[in-house]
Image 1: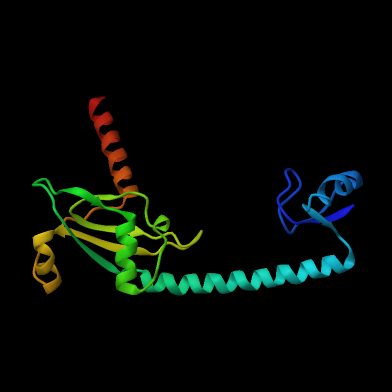
Image 2: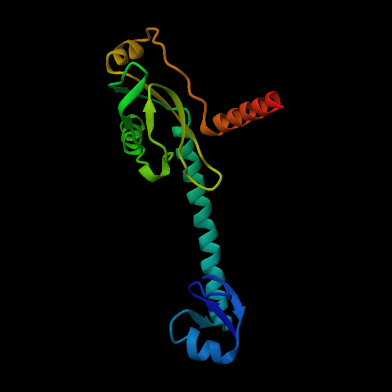
Length: 186
């Protein structure tokens, strides 16, 4: 029997799939529990209209996400924090801080879980990705300074700010250094 699944069914498919299943499985399990509906010509036509509408809405959503990503890309957020002599912060700049500062600066409310996972714990300039979708991750520039240097920086005066490479570059550099050390040991 052909049915249209209304939710995920293990080993058969996901919601929206039109699948062929055993008659008894459909009559005794899927249809009574609301996991599927019988695939009649009318229900297939209705299903196709819903799928077309779904594709159209998904395109509109992606277009809005691209517009938001363009507004966010390259935005510079400046944070003033207390820090020790070794440039380590007393505390950190968290994803909540970044999301709130982004809302204040651009008016775009981003869920804190979409901001990079790691808290920033030292003075410097960082590039932090914002996960908007599978292929969309605009980067925000984060500048963390000592509290007393923020006014100078915003006024355009020269302030020494270390630049930190993104994590993937750091891992590659560490791997290269380890390989060079191994070759030297041989």
